[in-house]
View 1 (cartoon, rainbow, N blue to C red):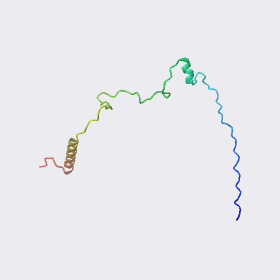
View 2 (view 1 turned 30 degrees about the horizontal axis):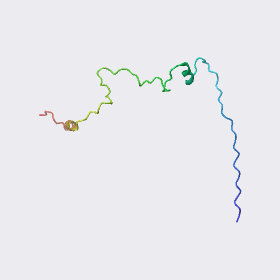
View 3 (view 1 turned 30 degrees about the vertical axis):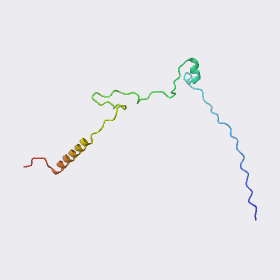
View 4 (view 1 turned 60 degrees about the vertical axis):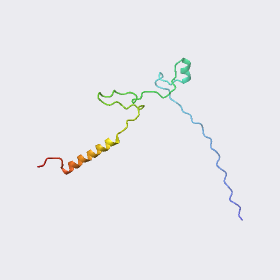
Length: 108
């Protein structure tokens, strides 16, 4: 029997330099981000929600006069009378059928 082929040694790990970012000085020195700890030291109240700002969906123009207001989500849903709905559908079908056949007119 032949001996199994010799395995090659794994390549030596390559040492990489740590990535560093060099930032240019800001052309606007009066604009800067401040650390939360620095704000607390100065006595400025810090909100619990760090993401805050203008949301266009939070505000809007009032609805035009005569329009229905949005339903109250806490109110129970209004029940639909299915018998009345069925009657209305039946009547609509009868009207369509009369329009197709030309019935309902005084054609003497």
